[in-house]
Length: 146
Image (cartoon, rainbow, N blue to C red; front, side, top):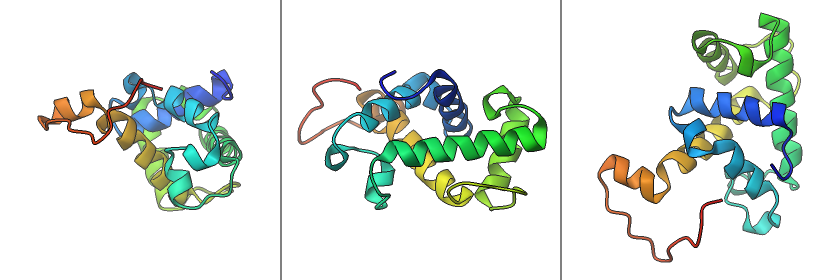
């Protein structure tokens, strides 16, 4: 990873996988890490589209920190260490803004941004289009994966 720490990547992968199955295998943490390392005006992150103030790493670190703090307070473990059922329940509460003692960017906003990033990484690729049975016909073909 270029900017993300291992624990941050673990949380992002667990969150992405909870939101969009296949996000972990598609490389959500590598995608976000790579996009955090490019100039803000070139980033393909949903945070940019929603006018989050750069550097975007600040938003993602604050979001990851809020998730792990809330998970530890509620479950006694970081989010990535929860079982699948507990992760889904946690994300549902986060999405609704119903986690007690939440400290960080609004949970519903984190949900929306990360879900959008996960959808992009799972379905916005040649492989993603193929999995949906849709021909991938880009105006400009990507030179490489992140």
